[in-house]
Image (tube, rainbow, N blue to C red; front, side):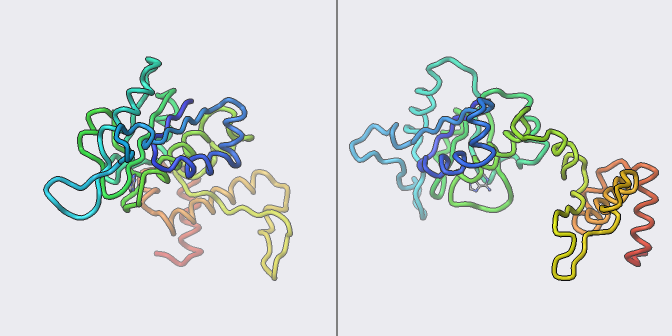
Length: 246
Ligand code: ADE
């Protein structure tokens, strides 16, 4: 998977992709991250990337020409890219969208907006606007990194253990069960006895129950979209009795 990132702050993108799992994914050749500084594609001597909004108002607007020039330059190799503008008004990015991107595209171009906005005409040169949530950030760098991160970890070989993908939140439709590691007791807080029992059947059932309990408490909306098994119904009944819910 190739990511092209158009930004005014290349070092922000390079810092995060230069560490940990993404760094290893790059080293293993699973992803390539090309970072382009939009300022390098200006044509005036002041290298101006933003300007005042027509019609007045506060703040500056990212200019269309440097973004367009940058896209044209990148497009010269003739490769097909899926072009995304990061913007709070775009389609909401979820685990499902991450899966869609990882399966449908081999090459994604991400344009990081900045300042108070982006010239509307940039939208003529993209495939889609994407938002990472209903809040406004100062720029598209964090959203671009969120997308790169969430998509990369779905690619074969990016994580050491592929089974960790299958069991995790949002893939199973439930929040994850509680995890523990050594020590067995910390400040009087003990690891649940069942996890030390070695009984895999009981451990599996306990984990399913605790995932259901956590989801019921923290994200009941997720349960509504889920098809429950007979065992799930029994577990939920037990949880409701234990929690004294009616
Ligand atoms: N730019 C500013 N806020 C954003 C958001 N929530 N998602 C994507 N891009 C953004």
